[in-house]
Length: 85
Figure: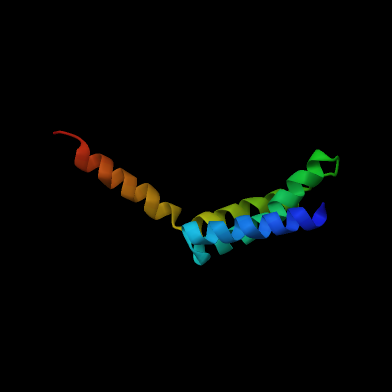
């Protein structure tokens, strides 16, 4: 069972790299500790304030590195161009 899930995970990871590129795919490595913390919370582990601060910092870092600000400002510019005066 572990071999199957490992192979499947690598296959999906490589397919994702084909779709969005290696640079964007590498950003998802930063989300692994967040997913691990969420799973541990589900099974009953205590979540500390420092872990929550870490989650916020990681998410902000991933959003910054992925260029989400450019996506938001680009969407605003497109909507302003499409609005009739």
